[in-house]
Image (cartoon, rainbow, N blue to C red; front, top):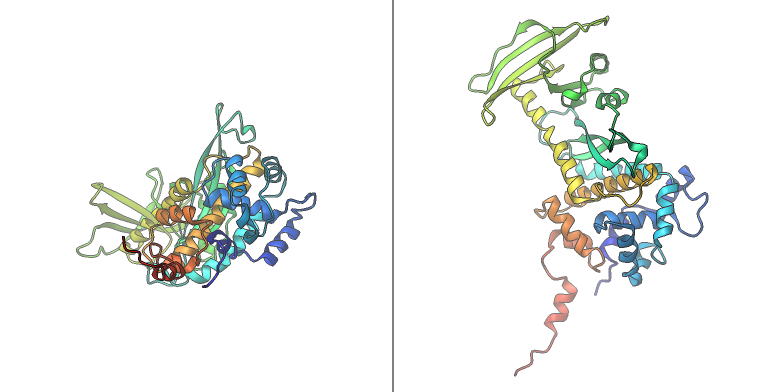
Length: 387
């Protein structure tokens, strides 16, 4: 009979210990450690995410209840609450950003080629989501008089729908402020909503050979310089080349307006882009793909632990959010590897129940409701008693 470690231990094998230790040394994360390693902290916070533990007590007692199986995870015993709380508060959250980036490289190899569109350009979506906090507990993140908030800014690669960039800021940081610091490879198509209006940034992207597609704001002042032919039997209403001369700027933007009729909402929707070659219907379909980043944020908030926190300091909160993003990458990786028709919510629920089950992870992904071969063999050899 083939012997395997628990499903949780097999998931943790996606993080080579040597590579993890290099990240620890890079950020000097164990400089003042007293027995409790960064790997132990990482295992505990991954258990928080994948096991849906809501508090330090649930994390520590959940691991302690599986004491005999912890050796497969690379930790001798489960941590105490005070030890884990201290580590989350004082150890650098940048460690888990590096772990995220290392895992992302592995995920890209699995997601290669899994995209909707036939064009060769890389397509990414840019957006942010706010996480509400209690202002009295998270006083460092005060957003309004009685509210606190942080924002998770994300770039989602539409090839496999993997997050390829993340940034955590306070709730007051405007979306376009983060957008300005980003630089994309030439030929990339970036999709974003109306929150990212910055003519200087748009001009910089155009100069860099980067394309963007966004929604048109009604107060935008422009001049129509050409009318394009509208495709027959389509929902395209207008396709225009326009020119924008920003106030107090020394450049002119040549852009394109595409207006379509939305049958479901019974209204016109207008898109703005600097891509002058794609068909009008393709531009509309590209913007529709932005909905995938909304679905990603919805899954992140509903399936993982980023709405209730096990620590109140900025470091503890960022550590928990980064481990949630790592857990989401793990789930996306498993989803891409499997041929079974998983929904992401189903996969999360069953992984949570199977974390400490001794079964081959990848065989289970393909046949989650079948008995393991070894157990089936034992069952076949049992005696049939007659009564």
